[in-house]
Image (cartoon, rainbow, N blue to C red):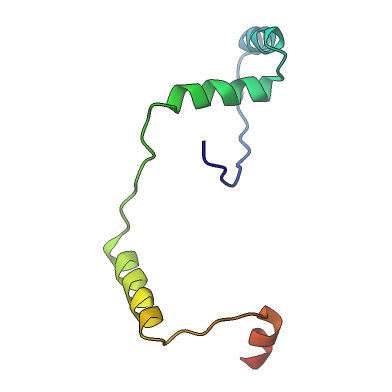
Length: 87
């Protein structure tokens, strides 16, 4: 799996389900979070990574930015403080 930025989620489940989940996790020597993570990874391992189409407006903005870059109309910023002070 590709290492991406992580997102934390909170799930509310009935207490009985929690105890069942905990017992399954304990059986594999995992905490409940790790066990759930592995269940989810196993569930989606055969799926293709979804591709979302950009809106026409965003695509137009992105293509213009790419063209500006190719045309040399962009600048490289090496020091953000220096750049912000120059505005």
